[in-house]
Length: 198
Image 1: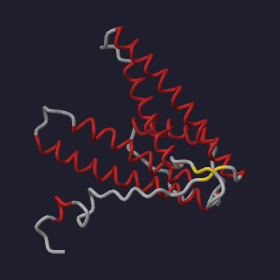
Image 2 (image 1 turned 90 degrees about the vertical axis):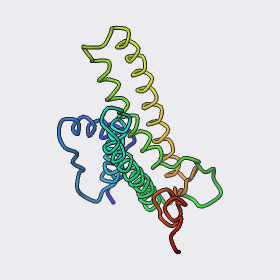
Image 3 (image 1 turned 45 degrees about the vertical axis):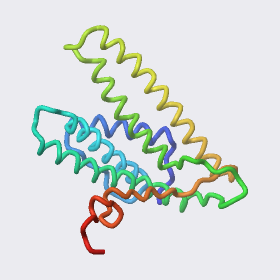
Protein backbone atom coordinates (compact mmCIF):
# COMPACT_ATOMS: atom_id res chain seq x y z
CA UNK A 1 0.00 0.00 0.00
CA UNK A 2 1.11 3.55 -0.64
CA UNK A 3 2.06 5.86 2.21
CA UNK A 4 -1.11 6.79 4.07
CA UNK A 5 -2.26 10.32 3.25
CA UNK A 6 -2.83 12.94 5.89
CA UNK A 7 -6.42 13.56 6.94
CA UNK A 8 -6.20 17.02 5.35
CA UNK A 9 -5.21 15.44 2.01
CA UNK A 10 -8.20 13.10 2.19
CA UNK A 11 -10.55 16.03 2.87
CA UNK A 12 -9.03 18.07 0.02
CA UNK A 13 -9.38 15.20 -2.43
CA UNK A 14 -13.01 14.65 -1.45
CA UNK A 15 -13.76 18.31 -2.20
CA UNK A 16 -11.84 18.16 -5.49
CA UNK A 17 -13.67 15.03 -6.65
CA UNK A 18 -17.01 16.57 -5.67
CA UNK A 19 -16.31 19.63 -7.81
CA UNK A 20 -15.01 17.58 -10.75
CA UNK A 21 -17.89 15.11 -10.73
CA UNK A 22 -20.45 17.91 -10.84
CA UNK A 23 -18.86 19.06 -14.11
CA UNK A 24 -18.46 15.65 -15.76
CA UNK A 25 -19.16 11.97 -15.18
CA UNK A 26 -17.97 10.31 -12.01
CA UNK A 27 -14.51 8.88 -12.68
CA UNK A 28 -12.86 7.12 -9.77
CA UNK A 29 -9.04 7.16 -9.88
CA UNK A 30 -7.63 3.79 -10.82
CA UNK A 31 -5.01 2.00 -8.79
CA UNK A 32 -4.64 0.20 -5.51
CA UNK A 33 -3.60 2.93 -3.10
CA UNK A 34 -5.56 4.03 -0.07
CA UNK A 35 -6.87 7.15 -1.81
CA UNK A 36 -8.53 4.88 -4.39
CA UNK A 37 -10.57 3.30 -1.57
CA UNK A 38 -11.42 6.79 -0.32
CA UNK A 39 -12.54 7.75 -3.85
CA UNK A 40 -14.67 4.61 -4.19
CA UNK A 41 -16.41 5.40 -0.89
CA UNK A 42 -16.87 9.05 -1.85
CA UNK A 43 -18.30 8.16 -5.27
CA UNK A 44 -20.98 6.05 -3.56
CA UNK A 45 -21.89 8.93 -1.25
CA UNK A 46 -22.00 11.25 -4.27
CA UNK A 47 -24.36 8.91 -6.11
CA UNK A 48 -26.42 8.36 -2.96
CA UNK A 49 -26.85 12.10 -2.50
CA UNK A 50 -28.28 12.58 -5.98
CA UNK A 51 -30.48 9.48 -5.89
CA UNK A 52 -31.91 10.65 -2.57
CA UNK A 53 -32.74 14.03 -4.13
CA UNK A 54 -34.53 12.22 -6.94
CA UNK A 55 -36.41 9.89 -4.56
CA UNK A 56 -37.91 12.88 -2.75
CA UNK A 57 -39.62 14.27 -5.86
CA UNK A 58 -43.36 13.82 -6.08
CA UNK A 59 -43.82 14.97 -9.68
CA UNK A 60 -42.13 12.15 -11.63
CA UNK A 61 -44.32 9.15 -10.91
CA UNK A 62 -43.77 6.02 -8.86
CA UNK A 63 -41.40 4.12 -11.15
CA UNK A 64 -38.46 6.59 -11.12
CA UNK A 65 -38.83 6.95 -7.34
CA UNK A 66 -38.84 3.16 -6.91
CA UNK A 67 -35.73 2.88 -9.11
CA UNK A 68 -34.04 5.59 -7.06
CA UNK A 69 -34.86 3.74 -3.82
CA UNK A 70 -33.30 0.56 -5.22
CA UNK A 71 -30.21 2.51 -6.27
CA UNK A 72 -30.01 4.04 -2.78
CA UNK A 73 -29.98 0.56 -1.22
CA UNK A 74 -27.27 -0.58 -3.62
CA UNK A 75 -25.04 2.48 -3.17
CA UNK A 76 -25.48 2.44 0.60
CA UNK A 77 -24.36 -1.20 0.73
CA UNK A 78 -21.33 -0.38 -1.42
CA UNK A 79 -20.54 2.69 0.66
CA UNK A 80 -20.45 0.57 3.82
CA UNK A 81 -18.38 -2.10 2.05
CA UNK A 82 -15.75 0.55 1.25
CA UNK A 83 -15.75 1.82 4.84
CA UNK A 84 -14.82 -1.71 5.90
CA UNK A 85 -12.19 -1.97 3.15
CA UNK A 86 -10.61 1.31 4.27
CA UNK A 87 -10.50 0.07 7.85
CA UNK A 88 -9.00 -3.28 6.82
CA UNK A 89 -6.31 -1.44 4.84
CA UNK A 90 -5.58 0.80 7.82
CA UNK A 91 -5.34 -2.18 10.17
CA UNK A 92 -2.84 -3.79 7.77
CA UNK A 93 -0.81 -0.59 7.48
CA UNK A 94 -0.89 0.61 11.11
CA UNK A 95 -1.12 -2.69 13.03
CA UNK A 96 -3.22 -1.21 15.86
CA UNK A 97 -2.86 -2.80 19.28
CA UNK A 98 -5.34 -5.54 20.17
CA UNK A 99 -5.49 -4.63 23.86
CA UNK A 100 -4.01 -2.49 26.60
CA UNK A 101 -5.05 0.89 25.17
CA UNK A 102 -8.29 2.82 24.73
CA UNK A 103 -10.34 1.85 21.67
CA UNK A 104 -12.09 4.35 19.46
CA UNK A 105 -15.79 3.63 19.00
CA UNK A 106 -15.71 5.20 15.55
CA UNK A 107 -13.20 3.79 13.08
CA UNK A 108 -11.04 5.87 10.73
CA UNK A 109 -13.10 4.55 7.80
CA UNK A 110 -16.30 5.79 9.45
CA UNK A 111 -14.69 9.20 9.99
CA UNK A 112 -13.55 9.35 6.36
CA UNK A 113 -17.11 8.49 5.31
CA UNK A 114 -18.44 11.36 7.46
CA UNK A 115 -15.87 13.70 5.88
CA UNK A 116 -17.17 12.58 2.50
CA UNK A 117 -20.73 13.52 3.39
CA UNK A 118 -19.58 16.86 4.78
CA UNK A 119 -17.75 17.57 1.50
CA UNK A 120 -21.04 17.02 -0.34
CA UNK A 121 -22.88 19.25 2.15
CA UNK A 122 -20.22 21.93 1.68
CA UNK A 123 -20.59 21.86 -2.11
CA UNK A 124 -24.37 21.88 -2.13
CA UNK A 125 -24.69 24.53 0.58
CA UNK A 126 -22.29 26.73 -1.40
CA UNK A 127 -24.63 26.28 -4.37
CA UNK A 128 -27.44 27.69 -2.23
CA UNK A 129 -25.30 30.63 -1.14
CA UNK A 130 -24.63 31.40 -4.81
CA UNK A 131 -28.24 31.11 -6.02
CA UNK A 132 -29.28 34.26 -7.85
CA UNK A 133 -32.96 33.27 -7.81
CA UNK A 134 -33.07 32.94 -4.00
CA UNK A 135 -33.78 35.68 -1.50
CA UNK A 136 -31.02 37.51 0.35
CA UNK A 137 -32.37 35.98 3.58
CA UNK A 138 -32.09 32.45 2.14
CA UNK A 139 -28.53 33.05 0.96
CA UNK A 140 -27.49 34.56 4.30
CA UNK A 141 -29.01 31.64 6.19
CA UNK A 142 -27.16 29.20 3.95
CA UNK A 143 -23.92 31.15 4.43
CA UNK A 144 -24.26 30.64 8.20
CA UNK A 145 -24.90 26.93 7.70
CA UNK A 146 -21.92 26.68 5.36
CA UNK A 147 -19.65 28.18 8.03
CA UNK A 148 -20.84 25.51 10.48
CA UNK A 149 -20.31 22.73 7.93
CA UNK A 150 -16.77 23.93 7.30
CA UNK A 151 -16.02 24.10 11.02
CA UNK A 152 -17.36 20.57 11.41
CA UNK A 153 -15.17 19.38 8.50
CA UNK A 154 -12.10 21.00 10.05
CA UNK A 155 -12.87 19.53 13.49
CA UNK A 156 -13.48 16.03 12.10
CA UNK A 157 -10.35 16.22 9.96
CA UNK A 158 -8.33 17.09 13.08
CA UNK A 159 -9.94 14.24 15.03
CA UNK A 160 -9.13 11.76 12.25
CA UNK A 161 -5.49 12.87 12.12
CA UNK A 162 -5.24 12.66 15.90
CA UNK A 163 -6.61 9.12 15.88
CA UNK A 164 -4.22 7.98 13.15
CA UNK A 165 -1.27 9.57 15.00
CA UNK A 166 -2.26 7.93 18.29
CA UNK A 167 -2.65 4.52 16.61
CA UNK A 168 0.84 4.92 15.13
CA UNK A 169 2.20 5.75 18.60
CA UNK A 170 0.36 2.80 20.15
CA UNK A 171 -1.65 4.92 22.58
CA UNK A 172 -5.09 4.31 21.01
CA UNK A 173 -6.60 1.60 18.85
CA UNK A 174 -9.57 0.58 16.72
CA UNK A 175 -11.01 -2.51 15.12
CA UNK A 176 -12.84 -3.09 11.88
CA UNK A 177 -16.50 -2.83 12.81
CA UNK A 178 -18.53 -4.80 10.30
CA UNK A 179 -21.93 -3.35 9.46
CA UNK A 180 -23.66 -6.61 8.51
CA UNK A 181 -26.35 -4.77 6.56
CA UNK A 182 -29.39 -7.03 6.56
CA UNK A 183 -31.82 -5.29 4.23
CA UNK A 184 -30.08 -6.37 0.99
CA UNK A 185 -29.52 -9.97 2.05
CA UNK A 186 -32.32 -12.32 0.89
CA UNK A 187 -31.45 -14.72 3.72
CA UNK A 188 -31.72 -12.05 6.46
CA UNK A 189 -34.53 -9.70 5.37
CA UNK A 190 -37.93 -11.26 6.28
CA UNK A 191 -39.60 -9.34 3.45
CA UNK A 192 -37.26 -11.07 0.98
CA UNK A 193 -37.26 -14.59 2.40
CA UNK A 194 -40.91 -14.78 3.50
CA UNK A 195 -42.68 -17.59 1.68
CA UNK A 196 -39.47 -18.99 0.19
CA UNK A 197 -37.98 -22.32 1.09
CA UNK A 198 -34.61 -22.11 2.87
